Image (cartoon, rainbow, N blue to C red; front, top):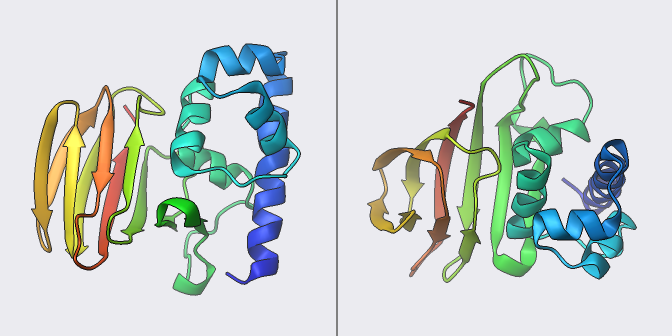
Length: 190
């Protein structure tokens, strides 16, 4: 995606985050309590002054009871059945060295989705809670090495390895290097 498309996605995302809060009748203070994100950060996010990190989006999605993929799909037009590679939405958390491609954009009537992730060496993404408890994940490493922690258990994955788990608690994606890691994550709603 080009810079204009990235900025447009960021603006639509900011607008959708504001809509979700308004739809529930929550104040910024209420959302801050529910998400653990400061009121000032929430305000700046909704005004599009800052870009959310992956961890921040996860906290907001947990408060709203939806997956990050669903939130991102809500700011895109209705997904077609066939999504050419150059049309798959890409979101970047540049600060944390994380790139996320929605290979199969989610649809409200479907339970599964495919996401491609890439982490730069040293990238360390932590999620305190799952966006939706009980999500089934199938994590397949395509290139590189990934230290994946589910709850208190760390798994060392290399190219070709696949880890299947249900997510009830915290998780951590860490790229120990020396090179980047690229993986596919199949997510199935409970």
